[in-house]
Amino acid sequence: MRLYIYIVCVVFTFISCGKETSEKHVFLGGEIINKNTDYVILYDAKEVIDTIRLDGRNRFSYKFEKDFKPGFYTFRHGAEVQMVLLEPGDSIMFRLNTYDFDESLVYTGKGAKKNNYLINDFLEREIEEKEVFKYCQLDAKVFERLLDSIKAEKNIKLIAFEDKYTPSEMFSKIAQANIDYAYYSSKEIYPFVHYGYDKKSIMESLPEDFYAYRKVINYNDEFFKHNFNYITFLRSSFNNIGLGLHLEHSKKDKFKWMDLCYNLCRLEAIDSLVINPDIKNELLYHYGISFLAKNKNLEHNDIVLKSLLAKGTDKKKNDKILSYNASVNRLKTGEKFPEVKVLNLDNNSVSINNVFNKPSVVYFWSHMYKDFFDNSHKRAKELRKKYPEVDFISVNIDCYSTDRWHSTLKKKNCSPQNEYMFENSEQSIEQLAIYPLTKVILVDKESTIVNGHSNMFESSFEEELLAMLNR
Image 1 (cartoon, rainbow, N blue to C red):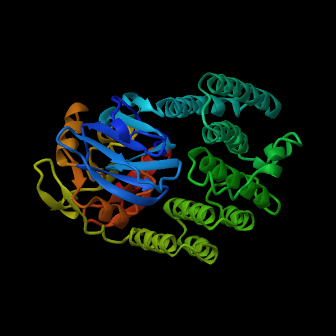
Image 2 (image 1 turned 60 degrees about the vertical axis):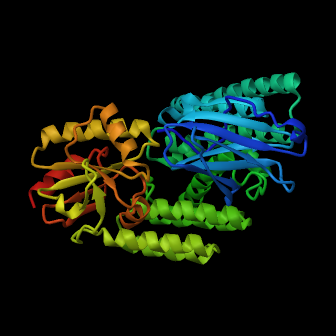
């Protein structure tokens, strides 16, 4: 499953701006093939700057005003989110195909080289992550030497780029931080990925200076608070710091992610180290939604929720967490499946409750996660053969056109049986608390929820199916 929140602006043609082109002006534009909507939304960090409609050739362009500030800018098309580094004098166009997002990105124009570098670094990081997971099974000292080697190669590459193109100080600062935070993140995940449930023994076996860099880490970096690598590092870091606090008083031999004590320790670590309100609230929100989505003990949900609300100061995020928790509670075993409208392949609106004619498994997918589409449909096909008494109902959660949905199913040679799409995506996602996307809901033929938070890929899933059939 590919990560998608990162630097991604691409360019296929340069806009000639005549006398207007100067160091004071900045332009951003693009062409979108197989568009999902008729517009793009441009953001400064997370604040909306403008909504720009595509023209008849699915292109757009935008000129920044005089109060332009150099840094990262984000644009959204449908559910796709991309970021680009813009500085004075940049004139960047991109061309992308929404069907093959990463592979289709192409740049041109002034400012393209630095963004090309950042994207290539991101794509290499995706490949690197798989190798790092393998390295995590090695002895900590060997693991560290391999990471040091990867980091050294990246530093050499960055120096060569800087010598050739003489980029701005801002670019160099960002590029170096990407290298450093990727390195730190790899170290932070080591105890979790390293084989074995006895995390205390693993932590005790680490070299004394394994996390020495924590002494100079800024957990409140305003400049990097929206940077992908920095955010990833913070999440990995607080997972690990929380683990250390948890192990100081835990008497359990096996570590479990949903352990109440561990999750409370992680929240305490954030509260003690993070002062920046934006960073703190974002971390609290992330961990809060993650815990509520995966935990099955509603009493523990209330305890974690109380801790979150006491620490978080962002009312909108707190309200979202409360709303999500209410949705989770509506999916308790024995409750009726919420009234949700879906579209069938004839584009007719129907209540999903009218679809349940026998015990059913409802699973979800999005165009943004192409690998997951393939894996979930393959898994459903395998299970359908083993359990013909069960319906496997696929629901697309995107807010795209039905044409895009039809095209994808046709392209993937999917059977039209039990394929649906939300009529109101945003509302339905909230009602069914769809996070993570691997979540599936088990329902009996009377539309009664058997399990509102299951997972087709867990080893115990078939036991759940048998239990539902034997009710």
